[in-house]
Figure 1: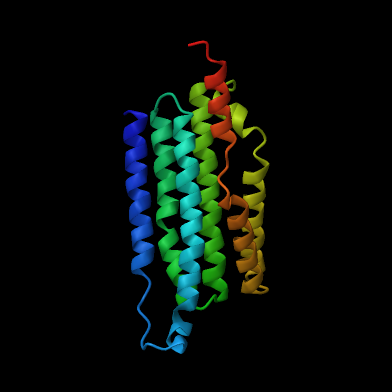
Figure 2: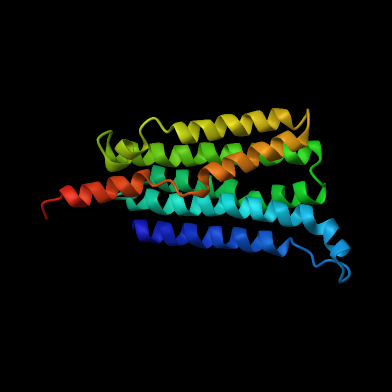
Length: 198
């Protein structure tokens, strides 16, 4: 399998995920501003989850561009990531329809934690295939941003049982941190291209 085929398949799955999320939004009953109030939690969740999915799509694109070849391990790690991403519409809808109840808000954090861990596994699979001196290994470094995100999600899961609003604030914080695309891999690729004598 070429990496272009892997990227095209992943892009297709991510596009379907976004489509499913938007289909979960229901038209308000009525034409007044008040009619919007019952659907505001669902709209908020859609925007939050759209940002998260967009972040994964953007960073996944750069990740695959730093990869030279596809292995079976990379394919399975990528499918594992797509599995957890495909659950985002479910927990997004559940949290929105429950108006941020404790368990749905905590489960949102569980799915986001698993997405983050699955992304790390894809990175590790690529680095194992390409070696510790690869572009990706150098670009990721200690991955403080990724580790912080996982820690924040775990904190949000626990916080949901104290106050779901604390969890929501943490989810917004993580989304804000990642909203500006992570350009470590992009910079590493540009640097390699500038230093390439060819």
